Image 1 (cartoon, one colour):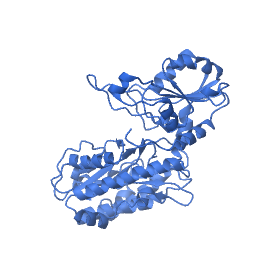
Image 2 (cartoon, helix red, strand yellow):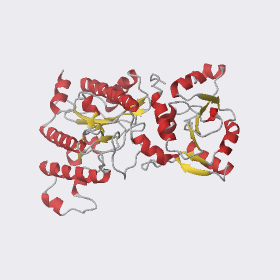
Image 3 (cartoon, one colour):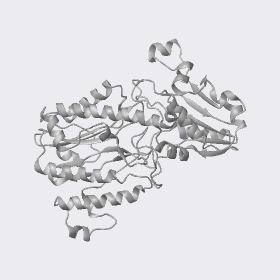
Image 4 (cartoon, one colour):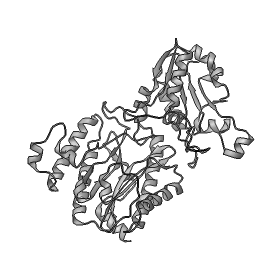
Length: 431
């Protein structure tokens, strides 16, 4: 891993929170993701399963975490099964966790090698009445590739059909959405690296640069600061490209007068940041670009104040759309008559602002959480309104990440001093 070892209390605390939700005499089994073939003998870069990482911090393929707090055998109350390294693996693939390092990373006291681990677990599973198994229950997910979690659930049900099975995902969605102090420390490090990337491209961007070169500048800064890289494929969209919400080709040359939308996140220690900024290619916003940018910024500042305990995400979205409607009227993009005659199922605002304002943030950039339950203290959300005017070739989205607290929302990117005002951006680009 590029990142330094994290505080094991982060993972100890997370396991305690999960165990507190388990039924008596139950166990939970978590697996790492599959490692997928690319082409020939090449493999895709391994990405750890978010649930097992959140529980133990082990960032390695073929890993298994077992929790059985009521187990009569002490050694199986919390244990990990990992790949046993050898001289050949060390020569070809490098470092794998030793038992000592695995405990130092995770706080899990008992480490075993995963050779024939299911046979080793057989008597333990037989003692349990209930087994918790995780699946990807993120309601935005549309998985098309094989999943270890689903395959293992089928294997368990075939081998142990008389056990009771429960969904670990229901517990995890609620727990993962509320961040501990240890998690927030890591998330703030990701935000700090995001700031460094933004400052770098403010200095290097000019007409004639490639969108791909801006992406490369961000990647350089992120990797130089020990991040794993991007938390999602970055969007670097100049001019009309910014009106395509998921434009990730980043293939065009930036023209003089273009406004550039950059939506990127840092993956630091498997925690994600998410930030969107806009910058003028030549260092100066045109009057129209400035008006659209400031309108979007006003909406963002008002929207983030509504991210408070008790807020319902869907009600919040409607409120933000109401704020945005007034700004679009002010920009001459909508009229009051347009609003009066709108289809309530597709309001007029959707022509220029067609996406949601906020999503959960954490281990995943679109993190686990219950979207139909009230917001709670400790949750972290994006706040990202946008205005997309295809006929003018202007697309603006401004995104910060917001922490919900008892004393009101904290903007983690304002907290880090990430420049966002037009005057700040222009001044930094002129240096």
